[in-house]
Amino acid sequence: MPYVVSLVPQSPYIPSGLTAIGYTHGTFSKPFKYDEEWISSVLNSGTPMDPEMVPRRHAVDVKAEALPDIFSLGFGYGVTDRVREKVEELEPGVHQFFDIELTTKGGRRPKKRHWLLHICNRLDAIDPEKTTLPLAPGGLEYSVAAYTVGEPIDMVLRKEAIEGKCMWIDRKFMEHFLSDELFDFVEKNGLTKFYSTKVEAV
Image (cartoon, rainbow, N blue to C red; front, top):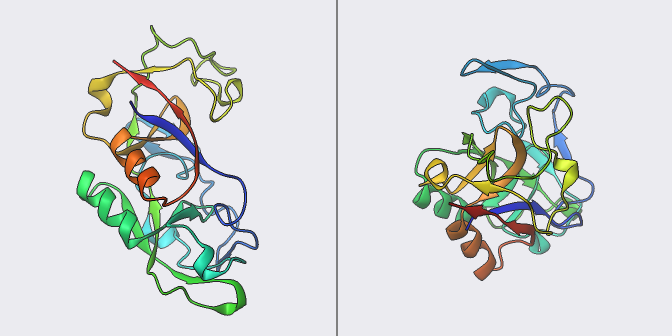
């Protein structure tokens, strides 16, 4: 079964002193149209990002050796080659990986290469007839506020909609989803610590 995930809200999973060098505030907050749908921001949208928008230099106030293989860069996941290779194995050529220059505590550069991972699957996978999670005001999306990460969630996904996908964002629930195969890879290899909730898929 797939998982809804978020990172543990503490360093090094969400590094303190996180700075995107050269980033202009509001860059990602421009509404755009995608497949006849208006989206307020490319972040957490599951749609491709213009490479020219992406900050390529980042600094974190965490020791290089303490960084896990998956952590938050604010604009997406910071990941190592090991994670990139697994995602590409499961879904070749789907998600975006932007080469970044990372500086850690003390001005050190990590030995491992790092990428900014941007999820590029926007699905409509939630089965409305089997999902009892309440809708948010306006009735277009399910309420993120109505559930707690790590706790059971009253949601059922349509298996055919997620077939062959390893990570995605649902257009009616703006959280990150991982397939059981990718999640198990992360867990078994200790690549990061997610808060996670299993979701039924039928």
